[in-house]
Amino acid sequence: MEKAIPAWGLYRLLKALERKRFSGQLELRAAVGRASLGFDDGRIFRVETDVPEWAFPAYLVRARIVPDALKAERMTSAGMLVESGVIRREDGARLQASYLRSVLTLMMSEPFPVWGIDRTPMPAGTLPDMPVEPEPELMRAVGRRDIAEVRAVVDRLVESGSPVLGEGAEPCLRYARAQFGDLQILRYLRDDNVEDAADALLAEEGTARVLFSLHVAGHLSFQPRPAPAHRPEPAVSVLVEAQAPAPTLDSAPASASGDLVQSDVEARLVEAAARMADQNNYEILEVSIDARLSAIRMAWLRMRRQWVRTRFEGVVSAHAMTLLDGIHKRLEAARERLSERNARLQYNRAIDIATPGLEARLVEVFEAQALHQSGREALANRDAKAAMASFEAAWRQDPLEPLYLVAMAEALMAMPPSDETRARVRELLGQAFAVDADLIEAHLAMAEVLRREQDWDGSMDHVRRVLLLEPENSDASRLRDRLRKRPADAVVGGFQRKPGTLLGKVRSLLRGES
Image (tube, rainbow, N blue to C red; front, side, top):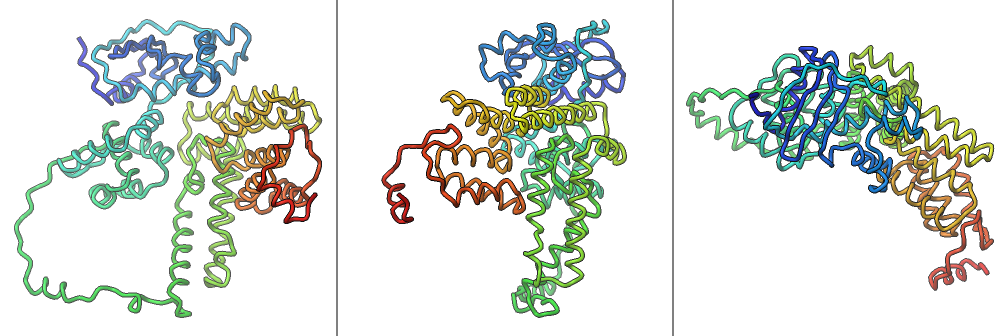
């Protein structure tokens, strides 16, 4: 009988089977039920399970592909959806891969008292399935655990000895950076300065999650510390240290112009420019390696606003302003490269993060974007039904992209209005905001919804949020000008006027409106 797999032990078994290029089935039994993972040449392609939470219908609900749980129960697999003509064959393969990644994330922390392997070749199926790698799913699983649980484990490990980073950790470090961001702990780890990193940064949540992930993956061990030799400090050194005055604002070095704040601002800018020189495009924009196009654009807008020129003009030196121009060019170059399919795939290979699983996901992302663009063209030609079909197809292919939810809402707004349509529009926009509260397209769509309801103030609030992030946004500027004119028609674009409130009537009287 095989030794039981403890909690968080599944990852190491998956990596062992990958190294042995195992083909067959990995049978797992947990307290909640059984699961079977299908392997081919060490790569994971399939999953079958009787655990309701891990099953395909639960994934459809969790991913908001089919919000109705009762309807989802009838959809048992991506293959069934292909065979019944609901989705295309290639969409089924991508949906199957997305489902498998979701299940692996849920399984990572589970203990399996009983398990075994069956070397029977994986049966041929109806879908050209895509392999899934365990590293990113481990990081996602750790990212979802309660931080108190993670920190308690890491605290015990750190107390037990000094952390030592083993060989072969670089792939996990890359995925940790993609999941948790470019944390300072990762820089310490790259410099092989693990012990100082743990001591200095353990209070940070990201540090605890990174150390926990590396320990689970088997790349981080903790060796007992040697007993410190007793060496009393000379009394004079203690006395001198006690008498040393604490630094004060007056004693701090000033800039050439004598302005302390100016020196701090310039130092921050210089530090950022130096840091970006050593970062890849994902790290610069602070996005994951499988980031969707809307996430890349929004990250670029946020970073650009952080380094807007008006914050530094007249405050820093001419040399620092030159560095600022370089920062903006670096941000723009990162956005452009990650937003174009071939350029991004080539870049991933150049920085050594390309994997078959990641490339398959990016193909999904850009093919869905092509469907979205087709829908935009149909919407521009006032064919709302064709646009909706394209937007829905894009969303089915890449349900993690909130831009497609907004696009579906826009297509509905172009159709004859009804109570059901209005409710569905708000539901779609609410789902998009849940993914990215700053998403510009969602704010513009909601501003238009509120304008049609003649909620002028509410609409203007959304317009202002857009212009805050993207001052040159022409759609927001046009809508702002339109709102300032305060059209007096009772019905705008088919959305009925809300009943007037006492406060609204008072505002109208003060403005001199009828």
